[in-house]
Length: 153
Image: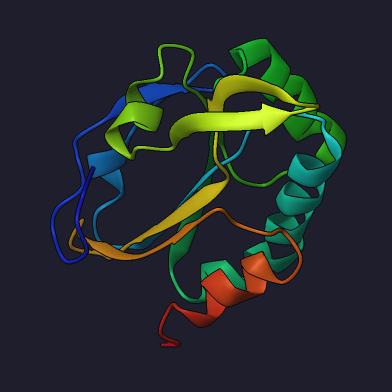
C-alpha cells in the first residue's frame, strides 16, 4: 500500500471501453482513483453520479478520475453508458489494484461476513505520489471533498 508522499505502484488494467489504462501514463496531472464495491448498486451509482456531475470542475484542475471495482469490463461498459460517465471505469477482476491499495477487507452484510471492497479514494499528485486518501467513504459530499483537496490553478 502506498504511503502519503510516496510514489504509487505502476499498475495497468482494462477499462469499460476495452482500452488499456496505465496509471503511470497519467503523470503530469492529478489522478482521483476511487474504489467502489459494485456497479449499479445505489451507493456506487450515487458516487459515480457525484463524480460525473463535478467532472468539469475536476478537469479545470487538471485532474482525471478513474473508478475501480472488481466488476467485468462488460459490466463497466453498461454502467458507464447508463450513467453517462465521462471518465473510465477500470475492471480489477484479478484484484491487483485493490490489493496494491489495500481496499479489500472483511465486511458484514446481513450478519454474514465476507471479503469486499471498502469504498476508498486516493488522490495522486502530478508527480505520481500519493497526496491524500479517504477510506471507509460515505458518499454524500465525498466527491466535493476530493475536489476541494486539489489545488485550484
